[in-house]
Length: 181
Image (cartoon, rainbow, N blue to C red; front, side, top):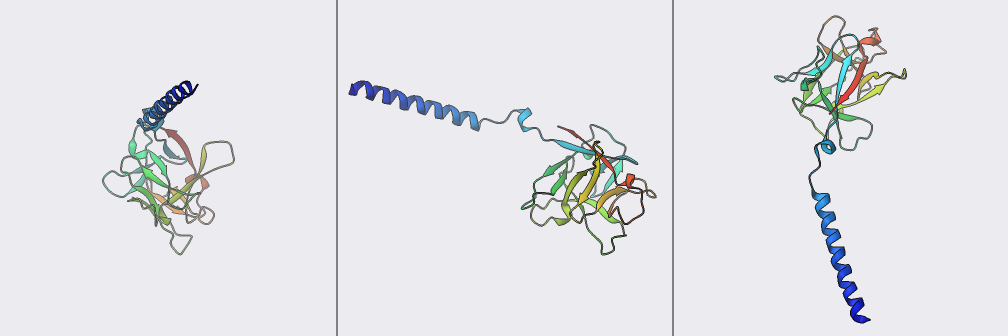
């Protein structure tokens, strides 16, 4: 009886070690391409083109939409201590969308890209606020509660201000969001 129990015990321990080893090997294996795919977002303005990052400067502008243009592909990244807003990182430049809030809410604020800062990042925090009309349309809103927009008088320019205080058509503030991997 003791011999049988001892043998079963050793076999049991061996099987357990083999199972654990297999588990460790499985969990440490690299992720497949499908599992590791990052979702990228493209923001298409209702009045003009897509949100585009310059690959030669810190400029951000709207340009003709091209589905394969990595300068028009953005991903959301975690910001330290923030749950509602995130960093918006461009695929081509690996820089974050940024803005600031001027004291006068009726003035347009610049929008640009800069090195991402996951600690002090108030001007780099954004969210996409979907409209309630059942479409993929919404507003790209900053941590200052201002919205990104294109310009009726300056084609290609992207600004940030409070859509309720400017008198500019809400369509300049409206973006449709689509995703790709």
